[in-house]
Length: 321
Image (cartoon, helix red, strand yellow):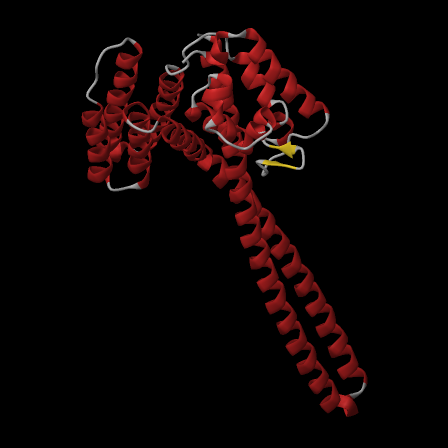
């Protein structure tokens, strides 16, 4: 199957359509195709049916799913221009099947970099990381062989990846193995499903890279919360001292009111104890919220960056045909 069925007019037809939808602000995330508005696929076909891509545009169905997945995860301003960038990058009259191998190699090379960075930070686990890296390299090799029309034993690559995960028994190794398996399956079985899964792996990998940033942000948030609590404690201590001084003065001035003064002092102490407890609780709540917000923001930023990178990798792969 050749892209746009080797007809420049077909490409221009769909490119003009998505440009028109962008200009009318019809391209929206979260909706397939409804009331003249929709996602990347919806505004391309004016119908939400990925299986129509091979029929109408000469584009593999797995690539339609990947275009859609990227669109839904890009920042809004980039998502609106994504359909026309995607169609513009596809040359007319080309077999697009090799693109999945090109972008898979880029994803997997990124995973190797992440594993190497983690290995540098955890010397005691270097054997684990080395095993994971070697399993990823086996999958990369299979992609490269396939690009050169050489048969590869994909099942062996998948088995090596899962062996690395099982022997390590922890999340980083399992994540790498899942990515390797997804990449292998992209050539061996369901291409579009694998592209979807591999793109998810890219996001997960970027999250691993951003984890340090998240903890840095969290530390800053904790420091801010503790600072706020310290300020609150200082204010409480100052108020308590002032109240004690006032109470002492009142007591000295009117010995006959000593009983009332003692009761007042006890009431004030109880009130301040309750206030301190509430302030401490509020400070810890603020600290917890700050930690959660910092982690969420870092993860969201990492995910967004990963999908932007995925979109650029796809454009570069299409431009290379």
